[in-house]
Each structure stands twice: as structure tokens, then as C-alpha cells.
Image (cartoon, rainbow, N blue to C red):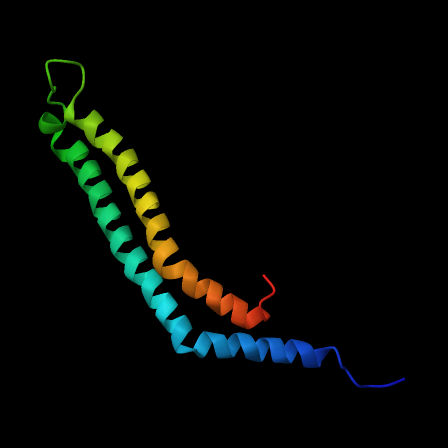
Amino acid sequence: MSTDTPASAPSDSVSERYLAVQRSDEFAGLRRALRGFVFPMTIAFFLWYALYVILSAYARGFMSARLFDSNINVALVFGLLQFVSTFLIAWYYSRYADRKIDPVADKIRDELTGGDS
């Protein structure tokens, strides 16, 4: 019986490769690009949603104002615009990721896996 553990050697090299990728400038740029989109969009959407909630709670007169002489009021329009803004952000992220994030991530993955995707 041998006490050698040859199985641990490949996992160490894989770990080292992952750590090397994590320390690379390319990966840092990828993270910066992702954060540069995600954080501002999250803040903008949160502020937009908070405005809707605050107006609903404290500006009931404004939010209950009827539009176009119908049963549609400002609160309903703001609520529907929450859905619209969510879909717009998702669409914009998809375009942003296709142009800025996915090509770099694919390149990093290909280098890491040796082109086996």
C-alpha cells in the first residue's frame, strides 16, 4: 500500500489556475464591468420603487388622481411602470452583457478550460 495521494495533485493545479484567473487583470475588468452596471441600475430601480411606495403612502391625493376622465389613476400608472422598468432593465442588461461581459467571460473560460466549452 502506498501513502501517496496522486489525486490531490490535479485538484491543486486546478485550484491554482482558478486563483490565477481570479487575480488576473482581465477578471478584475470583468468584475468592474459587471459592478458598473449592476450597482447603478439596482440603486436607480430601488429609488424608483421607493418613490412609488412613498407616494402611495404619503401623497394619496396625488396618487388617487384620475387620468383621462376614466378609472385609471396615477397609482395604477406608476404600478404598471414598475413592470415596464423591470423589463427594460432586463433587456438593457442582456444587451450590455452581450457586448461587454460575455465576450470577456467566454475568453476567460476558454483559457481556463483549454477551449473545452
